[in-house]
Image (cartoon, rainbow, N blue to C red; front, side, top):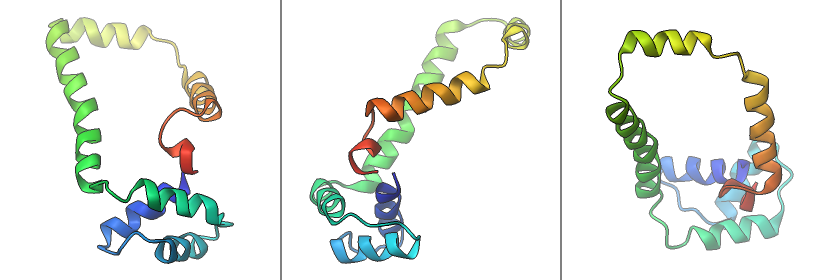
Length: 112
């Protein structure tokens, strides 16, 4: 995942995303850089408009939440009560995240 973060840092600072710059950011962060992963990421991002991709990714959860809230149309008080009855699943959520990472889901798994 740190490879993708490094590419996002370069994009945010208006630097070219190339092997040299990506390697520099990763080394500055103390990451043991794998040249093949750097090359793969640079190649994968060659024709990608990162700003547009980030905007689209941010819009999807917001649209889903809005659609879900509108479809539910329920009483906010009832929803608050139901939320208070939900058991704490923080540990389960972390386990699920680890399982997703291990199973290779997501773009981040391609590069980090």
